[in-house]
Image 1 (cartoon, rainbow, N blue to C red):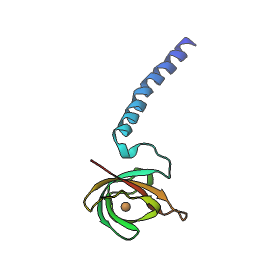
Image 2 (cartoon, helix red, strand yellow):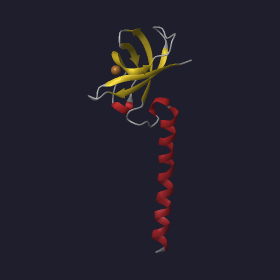
Image 3 (cartoon, rainbow, N blue to C red):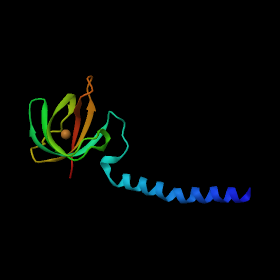
Length: 112
Ligand SMILES: [Cu+2]
């Protein structure tokens, strides 16, 4: 009985460092922080500001399985677009889903 308990404890100890390493890894990448499905963050470069759309080059967005790409993204109604943003600016982009499940920009924050 004692042997079985000791083995179980040993296995638990061995498994713990691997789990912690995984957590540390995800915490290093800001964009991989766990977010609610309606609050997806991605770093992007703002290429152009259109009428209700923004052209951006964004990095991979793991939460929704998007690779890095350059694309037009619609702005949600009431999206927060700070004054003074210009093409070429690096931004933190927040995405949400519209009523049809399409992803759209819910806000931008300038990045240093
Ligand atoms: Cu994209």
